[in-house]
Length: 553
Image 1 (cartoon, rainbow, N blue to C red):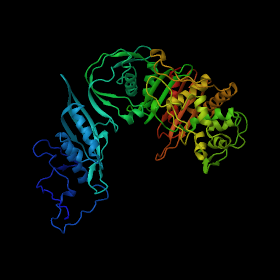
Image 2: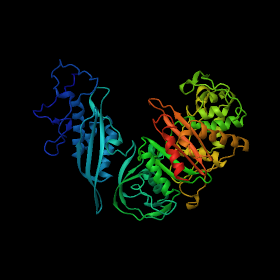
Image 3: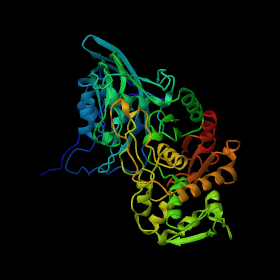
Image 4: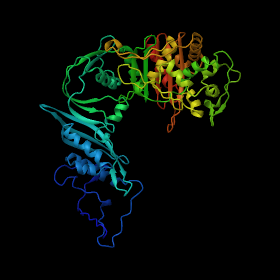
């Protein structure tokens, strides 16, 4: 058989690229009529034609803008097949692009591209969403990235659902119609209304409350454009999200445990602190008094899954004391290095404490003091301690909105040792670590909750056992000494004497700075916070937590 001939139509005019801006033309020949064929050069005819070489290397500016231009123009003109063909996943792109008009009911699209930034092209979307007699404008910003197709080097749009809308994860869809859940009017503990406008951090929390209590609270659904979560997002406990409300439903009312003054203070604390998240609870009951995230699009405070660093030493210390492997005021080793399971562990700045007590090691956050005991523990000892005493890692909390309840998997060798200092496979969030501090303060685990269980008759998680009085007393002594004289002393200054704290820094692959952690209690308040890439916890998360403990006095 003869070789396949590839013919391209030469054009005397091509769409313009001016100052890095992509000119999207609507109507006439439009951009949808511009075909992409290997840089625009016509292939040779005849049997002597050579097989085109696969292009490699970085994308040229013209390749990025041409691919982006073709995709946006075809999408704007409703040419789904053409738009999908310019992506690296035509099937998935075609389904979402079809759904954009069929399910989301958006028409009259105008797509305006912004300046190219490397292989990425931002663009603005405007249109009209209509359902029955209800119609409203919709506008948002998105972006696409251009990549080379592996087999032939063709520049294509790297397809993800977020290209269609930035709030979409892969597997999610946009739908316009009667809301799946009636709206809710969420109230603070004093009866004031909680809104995302007043408290920016609460957007995801309010979504979760609506999903959980929309039908139970007695409201009626309205008409809206919303993000409907797919299987992968639901596995991460993500809630559906309203984007445009076409007609109002009748909200039901749900009262929460949030304190308006502490919530306002928490919002202020995270606002200027980078990637910060914090939670405040009442230690004696588990009531959540404040939750705030500097990133309002993901509730890291409740659903984050991060290595907690040395704040995990609170749990580990309770285990070592119970096992007779450590005692607050007895001598305990803290060498510069300690090897276990083929790994060589060290302390921050390679310090050592000669002839010091376990309390001194805890207060200064000596890693090797904990790693040195790994060989004396069963592989599942830390997992059991977290589950049985602190109520963690059983995926059974029911606070009223979705949460991640911590994870302390059973590990062996070096990974087992790393978990003792909050690295390895251990994963927590500020809600989990605030609960840890609360358990130490109150003496028993009280599952945190945002909505009282009496509202819907649900059962709260319980821990199978409590620490002995002797272990609890020593653990409080360790945290109190750390707050007064250890790594937590500076942020906790002036908050004593009924207080305790623990700092943490968690190394993360690919980050220049570790995540900074801090967990503490004062009186009947317990709190924890994390600042991602914040460095030492005493300098990043510590001031945030301490400020809220001070505000709640």
